[in-house]
Length: 339
Image (tube, rainbow, N blue to C red; front, top):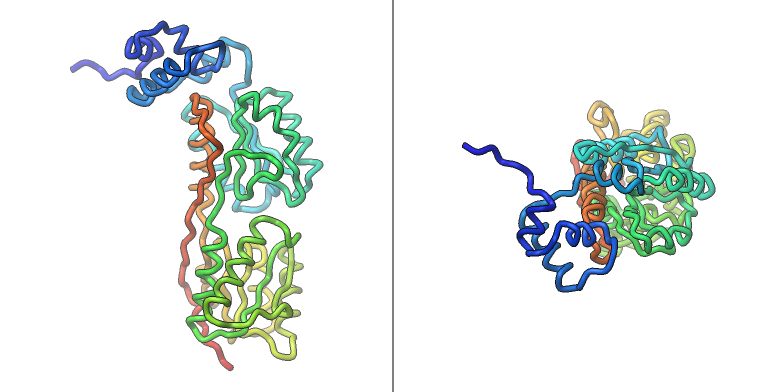
């Protein structure tokens, strides 16, 4: 039996009835090609399943380093580590190296890292934006054809590909779950600043669930805390209100950790808790933590595949991919309202 081989540029050229040079021009966007011919070439690429050898192309033209630059806000946050792992699992198979840098959630450092990656002439750029970023400075690179994909949060001031979680829908499901267990006063602990995309979407999901249940919104039940310590303090402030909440919804994994510590150290087992994003050993807590689980690995895989499609010649309009969340029922979100 003849061994199956990968289709080549020559195969694509033969399928269309053009030269390999014409196919190369289309795939590399290098030189004039009639629109009809370009469309026929791309159709043949899809039909044959042809994938350009990125390493060979980079070595041939000397244009780009065979690396992908990834900017994340925090190295210590397990969520972003899993996102990076998902990306690497895809790009490694194509001979690309993933280079990661942390912006420490600051726009200046994010822009500096991006400049460093661009100076290295990476093949593509992937960015989890910091809270105060503006990405208009990337318009020239975007127009020039550099694949740029944003993760977890969309770009600001730039139309570009992005892959995000179903933040609003997930938060709505988590808060609705608390309402279904009799809770009418539900505290919200969110991230800073209030304009941060993920915080804004999850807060809107919180509001949606209250509205759907006909419950009033009480600003006194909304607190912020960017890190674990601040979230713990925020939870304690909510619990010390004259009429405290009977349940808490934590807007991210660090807020969940802070809320768990606040409930534990105050000896409160009568307050329900649902967190957005899963935690390591969440099932070992007492009670085990109910969460709206994201899929960070799936997010990384989706972003990497989108990026590779751009490297392979996809010139379609910027796309936005929404990665679903799941409600994992474990115990803490099922504590019934006591009053």
